Amino acid sequence: MVLLHPGALFVLALLVPLAGFEWVRLRRERRAARALGLQPKRLRRALGNGVCAGLVIALGAFAASEPSLRQTKRVQLRADAEVYVFVDSSASMLASASSHSPTRLQQARAASADFAQNLPPDLPLGAGALPQSPLPLTAPNGDRQLFLAALDHLTAPGSLPEHLYGGRTATDFSNLTTLTSTHFFLPKTRRRIVVVLTDAEGPSFDTGATAATLKHAHIRLVFVRFGSESDRIWLHPPGQSPVIDTKFEPDLSDLGEVRLLGGETGGGYYDQRHLGGAIDKVERLAGHGPDRAAEPLALYADSLGPYALLAALPFLAWLAGALLPLSAPLEARSRRRRRKQLQRASEAASNQA
Image 1 (tube, one colour):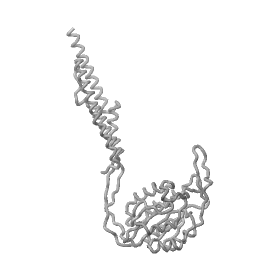
Image 2 (image 1 turned 90 degrees about the horizontal axis):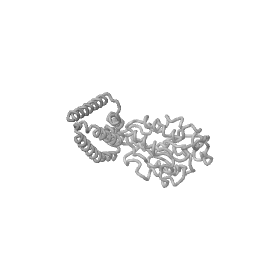
Image 3 (image 1 turned 60 degrees about the vertical axis):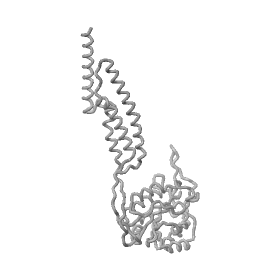
Image 4 (image 1 turned 90 degrees about the vertical axis):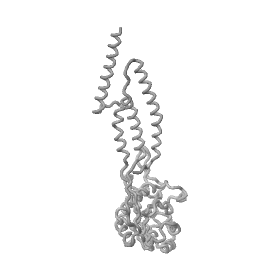
């Protein structure tokens, strides 16, 4: 078991002063009962509410720490092939066919899930964002959950620091040459494949020079294009109907260059309607090869927090005086005992009189 937010357990420090206050209160009640000639409650029963309150706090802190069962298994990964999937995170990816249609970005994220599901499980898969230059999010590995989480949460336009895209909203595909100058791939990786999920909108670039640089590093590009010329960015003002952002105009001036770049690097270019063909192409480019030594992969099951909260409900009900099958008879029994004690004390006082 692992705690995803162990800092929440600091709430347990509240139990120390609460226990002190409860002990002082019980001592005062017991002294008052003796002064009136009554028999104080048994200490075990008198501590019931305090113990319940402590258990509620402890279980709540345990649930807030998000405990999860960690399961570790060993997976075999290819030693000679690695794949990156980059999702275009420029502003134009927010365009859609209508105000209620999925955006290009949403379609690209769904396509990345298809890649994760259909590619061989032993093929290392890495995630990346493409605002203006390629930005790696996860290194190629066998954790498909981590891959999808990175693309779902770290590819929104405008969520990345401005210096990563120069304050511009269009993707510059010539910057894909940085894949060769940084350590995106392991040195021993011979089959290097980069999938780019994009709307293919951006400034014109030198296709020949870009392709030559990538081919020299044995990097093959597979493009999957999303969107059409009729797509628009829709604004949703509060309480009003959606309106079109007039500042956005589709720019497909480099569409032919992107298609040519995919072909010259030995990869390919596909429309979103032929996503299956792009997945098959990546699988063919990866081929078959030797596996590296098995690596441990940690998987997290569902959180145990909800079960801790359910366990705290009976104690909350006790504190609230709810009519639980066990608490109601006990309270009634306690009230009868107190009435008998008062009656005996009254009879003793009248006899003395």
